[in-house]
Image 1: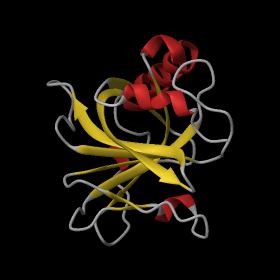
Image 2: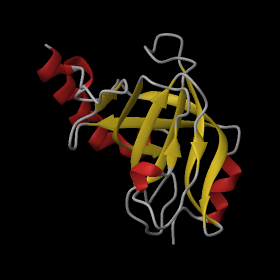
Image 3: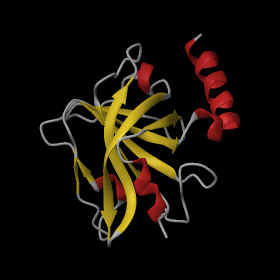
Image 4: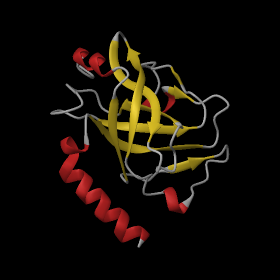
Length: 158
């Protein structure tokens, strides 16, 4: 089971996105080149959920806009999809997600025959930032991971 059906109650609401390093973040500009300052991922941010991504009538991700006037990507589009399916929600059972950030609104096509990387299309969207992270109702649900992530960011960025 992917995200719990009760997660539809988050439509139009804010969610907290915690990007983390994992295998690194890539800044894709059509040449698939990485930008070193983004390799650890963007700073955490809030997003407002505007639509869900469905696969076989189950919620596997969502699309929204980044909100935070001080954030580098304020106003940009963000999409996320679960990397592994399980019993997930935005509080007690977070799912680890692949996250896309781009200028234009993404198109979700969660086809079970494709790898999760191909579930989101960013037509006319390059450059885009792609990596891993967790999405939760608030920072409190990812407090321990948040603290480790912020410490890593400080260590790497100085």
